[in-house]
Amino acid sequence: MDTKLPEKPQICPRGSRQIDFIEDPESFAYSDFFHQYLLTNTPCLFSAKFTESWGCRGDWVTSGGRPDWDHLLQNFGDAVVPVANCGIKEYNSNPKERIPLREYIRYWRDYSENGCRSPRGCLYLKDWHMRREFPDRAVYSTPEYFSSDWLNEYWDFIDGDDYRFVYMGPKGSWTPFHADVFRSFSWSANVCGRKKWLLFPPGQEEHLRDRHGNLPYDVTSAPLHDLSLYPNAHKCCSPLSVIQEPGQMIFVPSGWHHQVYNLEDTISINHNWVNGCNVLLMWKFLQGELEAVHAEIGEWEDTMEDWHGHCQVIMKSCTGIDYKEFYSFIKIIAENRIGVLQNSSEERKKALSEESSAGCDPTLPGPPHAAFDLKKAAEILTLMLADDDFQKLDKEPLSPRPDELMQRLKTYA
Ligand SMILES: O=C(O)CCC(=O)C(=O)O
Ligand SMILES: [Fe+2]
Image 1 (cartoon, rainbow, N blue to C red):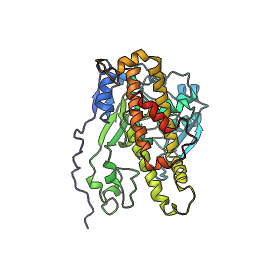
Image 2: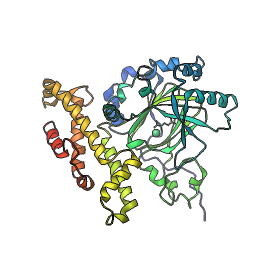
Image 3: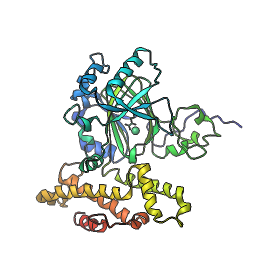
Image 4: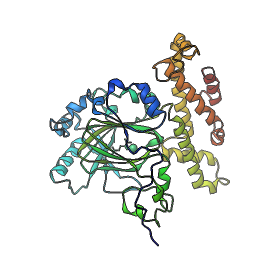
C-alpha cells in the first residue's frame, strides 16, 4: 500500500498564506484590532515599534541583541523558575522541573558556548510568572489591544493564578503542538531573539489525529506522512508559517493549534487572555472537556453515587476549571462591569441610548465596553442555564444563584 502523502499541501481554507503585518502604532487603533482580528479570530503580527518603549527591551538585552545574562542574574538570580526539557516527551508535552534562575543561566551560557550541546539536553524556561513575583519591576506594559482580559482580571481578583509569563530558551528550544489553555487568545512578544510559528486554523487539527484519536506531539515529524498511522493528515492544510523578529508581537487567536521554535537565543513575554470575543469558545471548549470525561467514565454512571459531581472533579483536575468556577468567573466579570455602569449612570444612559452615535461601541473604554461585556456575560449565562450538566449541579453554594444573576443582567441587556 502506498502510504505517501500527496506532494502538494491542501489549500488552506482561510485563504491567505501570509499573516497580516501591522507596521505603525499611530495608524492602528484598538477598534481596528477589535474588528479585524479579535472578532474574526484571525492572527496578526505587530512590528517592533509596538514594544519600543519597554524597559526589558533595553535592560535585558546586550548591545549586540543577545540576552543580557549578567543583568538577569543580578536582578532575578534567586527566583525559582520552571524549566522544561525539550528532548523528553511526556504525553504531548515536556517534563518540567523548578530551579533557580541563576542555575538556568549558568546552564544556558554553557549550552551556548558548547555549540548547543549539554549533558542536560535542551532546557527551556517556560511559564515563569515573573510579573506576579516582581510586581514592582515595570519591565513591560500590556499593549491596549490585549487589555480587555477577563482571565487575568478574574484570577487577580480571587488572588489565584495568573496567565502572564516570561519564556527564555536557547536556539533550538521549542514548544510542541498545542492549543492554548481554555482555548484562550495569546499574545507573545520577543524581547530578543527570533521565533518560528506554525499556526493551524481551528478544526485543521482534527485531520492530524492518529488512528487512536490522539493529536501529534510534533507536526513536522515523519510519522505524519504515514497514512497507516495518521490516516487523515493529508487533508490538513499546510500551516501558516510566521517568522517573528526581535521586538515583534504575535496575536494567536482562540483555538488555533500551534508549534513554536526559538531560532536563536530568545526571551519572550506572553499572556493568555479571554474576553467577550472568545468567551463563547471557552464555554464550548469546557462543554467538550466534560463530554470527554463523560465518555471516559460513562460506564459507572448508574452505579456511582454523585457521578456528575465526580465528572466535575475530574474535569477540574484535567482542565484546571469546573463549571462552578466558570460560573464564578462570569459572575465576577459581570459584577465588575455592573459596577462600572453604576458608577457612571449618566454615561451609561448615553452609551446604551439608541440615539447615541457611539451606541454600544465596545471599543470605547468605560461604559460602552462594560455594556458589551455584560451582553456577552448574559449570552453565556443563558447557555449555561440551558445546559443539562450545569442544571444538575448543586447551586446552593453559589451566591448569587445563577438565575438571580441572570435577572440582574437582564436589566442591563
Ligand atoms: O514561545 C513558545 O515557545 C510558545 C508560546 C506559545 O505557545 C504561546 O504564546 O501561545
Ligand atoms: Fe501556545
